Image (cartoon, rainbow, N blue to C red; front, side, top):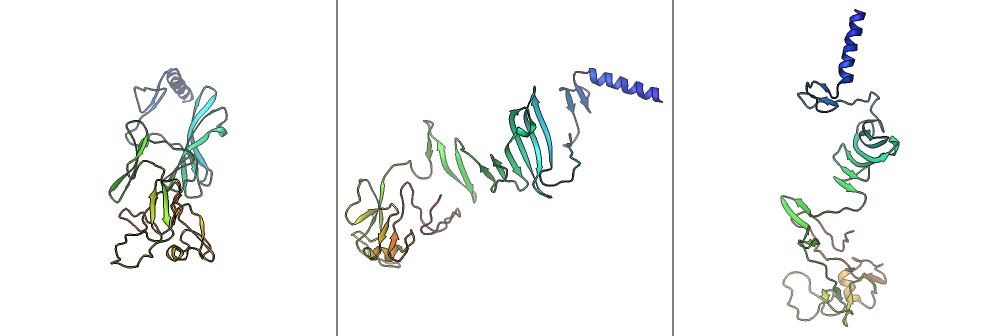
Length: 262
């Protein structure tokens, strides 16, 4: 029995070791190791340590003397793990860098391992088209134009104009059925192509004004845009910004009066 066993494994070793390609459940292997199965469970990598924080199971790739990448599952705690994609040509496994991380909740991080949203990128991104969908609607935020430049589909191309706000004028009536004004109204905002603010107007640059000198305007805007409400209040700051209407439109993107997007 011992002689048979030794002879059997000797023959098996000769057959496997001398073969150029080895097949497992595959009679015509196409690679040095070719594994086949009739379902999705083709290969299992198991770490027998108890599942916990930083306990990992890894598949490494190397070329020559360098490790060039890895796919690794890493415990986040006793119940959750993340899937990491590692790259970097290095002679030490510990120098591999985690470039892409996918959490159990589906959040994906590029350049960070704990993304807080569905896709979070640490660094600069570049895209040809940017489309946002919601409530069954599609919003083309930015698209690549014929000349290769990004153009805005919703809105307009950038053009530097000054927003100005009226400091004086007719104080508007509240409620519906207001009269039709033919003169400027205190607090109205306009676009102005000049390089200076006309008399009775001021640039919307977020500057502080004296309440005592601008009581009518303060009674309209209060401290919505800043100021201490005692001696000063602030004008809206529309430098490099686009005004939007407050409220909640059909797409659900709510704005409150005076809110600023970052």
